[in-house]
Image (cartoon, rainbow, N blue to C red; front, top):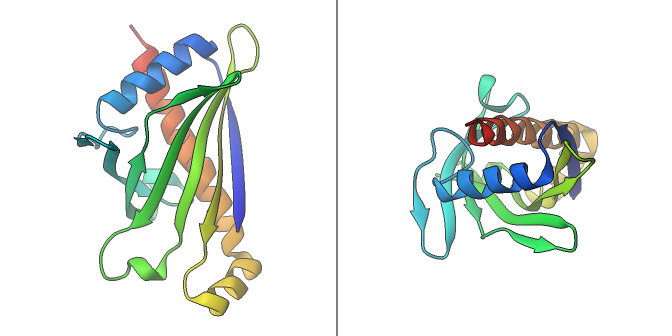
Length: 155
């Protein structure tokens, strides 16, 4: 299943891109993350429809280094739930994007594909409402990333 979300942010593109680079170099995009590995960034992150402020599941997030693609800055990512219950939750392959939306604004986005768990049963659950949860979770993730960008952009 495909999912996407976007969020306008009050940071000029060069400032937002620099903040995203710095947040990733620090080991992740959430304050709790501090582990980097040589082939990309790997960290643990709570995700859920209300971000880290509500019911959330801890996921393993893998990021590849960001790169400019046309006028966008793109960071490939994958997330998956760890542990024995991991197969009960979807995994996500997505791109986090950043594009200028004016001289002092940018748009942060995420576009990805997730696989509902449990085969056909999971696909039916997705059609019955899980897709709304996935969309809300992606929006919450963008809110978390935007908060980190604001933190890293501050002097």
